[in-house]
Length: 497
Image 1: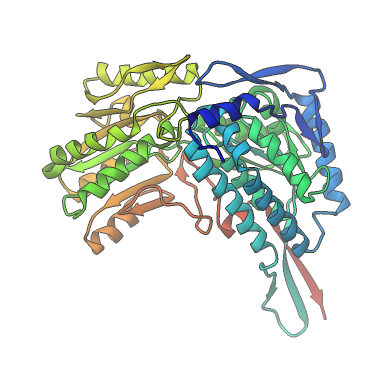
Image 2: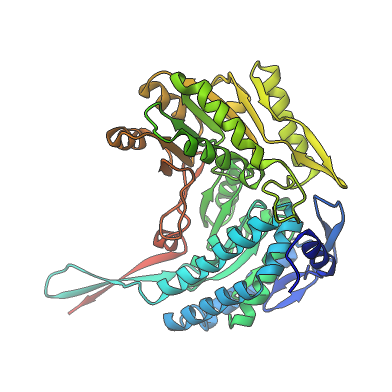
């Protein structure tokens, strides 16, 4: 067996021939009008595939297939154990095809191959396994009544679900939506981001191979203002779940109001604070995690710990430790297994992040490291991990979601000031607290307005715990059994005895 080095992955990438059509009613299909768009690799500049550019007509066809499959009941009304078996088969197929799936995401959005292979694909398979196991372990209810009545409360699938996902974790984000929606018995329309559509199409093929009936999972690649808008406005979609920017999340709320009042669940932007108190005993671990929390996945993480709040008495010492940790995230070829930071998703996004760096300098922040756009090989979509100090709460880099490897450091002198700084944001997705005082950990965690508060770590995540935000980070929860609440509805059946 050949060593899995850069040459190995480069050769595999060259031989890859990804499916690039829409997946509707159990088969690959061109867009109805024949249009296509290019899926480009950000670290080579080459076109990976010409992808079907779906629009309203394709959405109509997919909704028709999804509604027909739902009404037929082969999936929506089958025994929960049957759904469990199919989802478990899909999880195993994901593992069996891990190399291909990891390459698709690596090539589509510049993710390091090691992260895609060792984090994203296993997490995706584990999530389908987790929801498969949940299928036959959810009980309905018998409500308390008098002896003259029996009141049953049953959980039923909501119907046709649209899932619109971002490009930063293409396969994993698909699983966050698709796995619980399928486990609940729905038919699903998956719209991947135009920057990274390929792994979603392959996921649908593997789902059919696992035994999912035709029409139950459909994939509609295309642009947000075309396919995404058509999903939001479609009158026969019962529920839409979206992960992406706050700006686009607000549009989906408007689409729902303008159409059929479909349920809309949003997981939107973030500007997550990471609070480091002087009583933290292990500052080395805190610095290591602080670097990971912003530079992992090139900083393209909705819950990235992009605001670092450090108690003044340890500020300088902690920043020194952080600068040392940043060396592990120097950009490199995503196909090199040693690379921990690949490219940003495309040239346009790279320029956008550069604009934030320029604004930080213009507004008076001190650039301690990074900030330069790099050309490596054929691509200039690489950006050095960047660290600003002397940041004040009014600066753009402290308030707006950058979605890149840019960290802003702010000082605080008291617990109350730290909490006030942390909560001074329109976002409320995640937060982290570093302290060795149990009382402080509980007290601060309770005071922070965030969907997840990680104590002595960052961005804690597991299939068994809910993930989502408050304020303009959205509402509703992904992961855990609570995600099933988005994709099901309760029915009361009252029987008079």
